[in-house]
Amino acid sequence: MTSAPPPRTSRTPRRALAAALLSGPLGAALALIAAGQVWSETTTTFAGGTLPVTATGSDITGLPSAFALAGLAALVAVFAVRRAVRVVVAGLLALSGAGTVVAAVAGARDHAALTEKAARASGLTEGAIDAVQVSAWPWISTAGGALLLLAGLLALVYGRRWPSMAGTGRYERGTRAARRDTPPPVDPDRPEDLWKALDRGEDPTHGTP
Image (cartoon, rainbow, N blue to C red; front, side):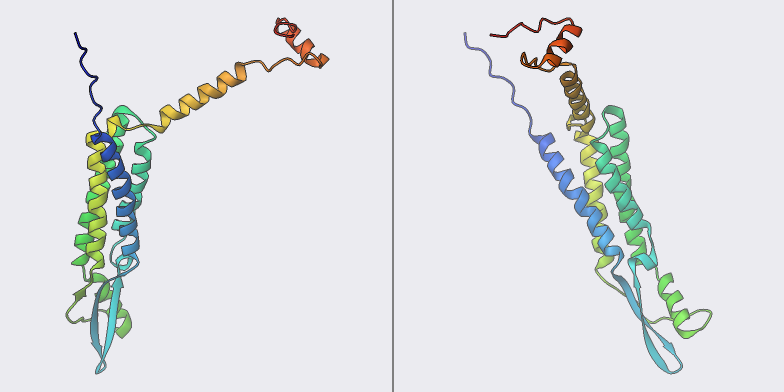
């Protein structure tokens, strides 16, 4: 009678872990880099002349950067907690990604920063702007948020089967404690070692040839 082969361990959680570790930091990096780039540009007419006006992502909104940083912190925290807390942190990671997407899309349509800069350039209370051109950077930030959202969804579905740094720390602390509890070897040529062994109630001659 032949025994049944052992069940195969699914590789899906490992692949999901690799995908989350790749998509999460990459998404946060894209959102943070995009924040410092020009998202929209236009011109304003003043005193018979035309002045160019540009607005970076951070000029328009600071939300994508804030959500990206929160998502990056949540991704690290996923591996520092376990069980139900991990699910909560994974949910925060997913929400950070979704927030980055929404904030970036809204920023691409927000012209308030351009109007304010046009007013400062012309010295008027309210600046009039011409047609606005939106660059690719808001959509790059949106893509970064989508990658963070993907990492959060993967953590929600497969996170319970991922390794935890907390367990590793307990193992290392236990190993260090075991090493501390193990008495040092006795050197029969050193009287101080013999006295220490006697104080511990050990036979210092045990094992000595």
